Length: 283
Image: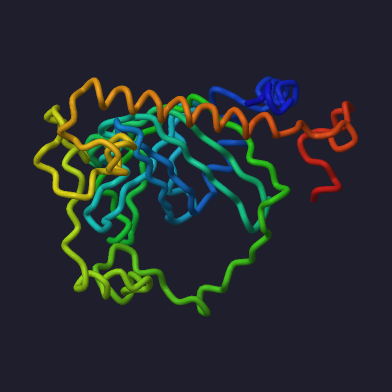
């Protein structure tokens, strides 16, 4: 993509100047005062999940320049992120300071799930949070492989609402109303549709075969020709593979045509003179 869109030189400059394999001093200070971050994980099939984590300043613990850890508080019991990490240790973290520095930090790496008592045995200096709803059940320890800036130019500048105006946060609550109730109306729709059946492969060992025991609709990870009903699951392997190859070839050709129409930025828009990572005209 860099070659097709003419960004290789700029990308190489970013890799060389901004991407570290550790957290330097300024990054560690930044992490230590954050109150939230966005987390991306995927299971062993590549099915993705993006979520949000929050806590008091310092809830993400920087244990050394290549290791950080964050607590898992009581939630809805789905354990989507922890389940994904148990199958695929790769994760991505994005921390954004919306209020002070208006800057972001990406941290990519490998993670493992650790029980609270095991984490405290290894790191007895970890503080004990006085709020019961913020007592960690588990920790996710992250081995840092990449750490780099998320530039400021598209980050909105926000202001905190005073505590007396926003009210206390309901850490660890099971009160449906305080958790948001049925804000999007999903529960109201539940009575009008069949019960949700999670894909049988989700967070459990695959049993192989064509999943003949799965009811319609086809699972999300089924080949496109099965999900669209083009070839029945009972078709021969040769027929399935032939259709798959044809569809894949058509898809690749379509992507190539789209990329061929994409043009690199004009020189006037991207001067050869390097002005640093933040162009004053964009701030």
